[in-house]
Image (cartoon, chains in turn blue, cyan):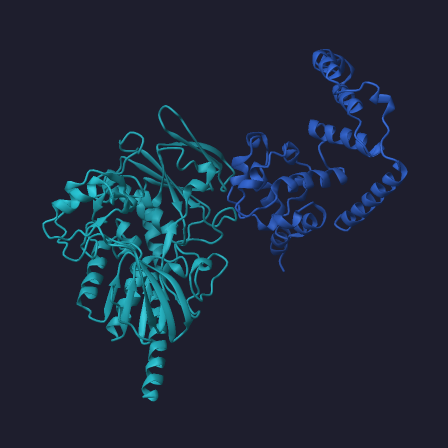
Length: 208
Length: 428
């Protein structure tokens, strides 16, 4: 095989498609896309994505591993499910977008400064540390996500809403300290650690 | 009581469209006894609603005329209109069939003079034009209808209009006392040719058919071209009756879609390509057509037609399934939104008339056929089951292939009745 042939073959090897199928939630469906474009056209945030879903699927099939995994695109998904209900092949696009984002994060390839990524990390830490989400602490963390000054400004801005929630007994400020969480936090974290270990081992098989 | 003589050597053809007509005529011309049952008041079916056929762009009226001549000339063929098969029991070679005959309220004295239509006042949505126009309560379904006999809409019965129609008739053809009856008959073979219906475009929510006045289906578009149709043969925007300037055709509207019809309807690509030639015929260079498609499925000899349309500078092709349509409430103009597949360009294109290339689904899904049929997952009736599916009842076909398919069904049915004939002569 000549060098040029080899290069062409490498370009079209579906290694990355196989990797996605094995590691990304609902990744099996990527090959079912028929490139009609309805998902991209239906996405309310579509104009802001660098690569809309239809293009991401084609990039996966064209073996563009780095471009896909380091892309910010799938992090824009707001789970409105417009694409999923309209897809003529019932491809679970929303799930695949989150699956791709999660996989990129697992491999440490996700862009660092994305607000959706920051939120996801804060939320996951909040939830997994005790087994139940601590809403008060989650809200505080989100206020201060972009620095101390920003956080104070945000807190003052949201003051009337917070007081309203207090009055309507929709928020308990003591919950911040008296948050119980689930009974066996250690056990929960052991399960999560094990799951992460299995996922990373599976992903490692596809690392060059 | 309507008298129908039939035996185990008779072939029953259900459906009087182009497939049913063809199957019935082919069998009758082979000397077999045939009964053709049609639910509507006239034979002809969907093709009578079309302006032109692809790829030769000839008029269906021409082919229909030939078939009607064959029908009138053949003594082996008996046609029952306004008749519906309600039960088929037994097995190949020995079926018992029940046929429900709806009252037409017009007997065969009718000379099709039209006096009854002039006399009655009530008007109803014209189903022949998909409700785009109105027709009288006493009516001929369409100009070439056969039999050439008027029909009294059942909604007229018991109203003064019915008496007016009766009084106006010089031929004593109106019979207001006609009632529904059911006849039973023995037949040897059954050909099921109930054809297709356009997929209900209203179900494709993002395209707004039924909500946006200027979104029409391809069959409604065909009706606009009929010189005797709802728009006198003019292509117009339904909102203001004016000529459009910029027409969009959306392919796979309801076909190849797991939310709608899973199958490819096969004819819609060609139908839209054909309809762009109507636009050119009527407006020359003044109106542009844009076809939005996933892929154009113009197969074998039809590829030449596709190339001709591609060469037309007024026809543009955009490789994209349109995501949704929005309407400007004042102008009734439409915006088509989507992303194309050749470069991932996002578009919001303005058009003033949108034609949805809706697909075909079986008129009577296999599960609703009152007899022993084999159906597939899309509701089409197998061509080689106990009852023989033919034409668009058996798969999505164009007219040309429907005729071939129906001829094959006629041969299958002839084989059955020949077998019966052989057995019966041995018995004697």
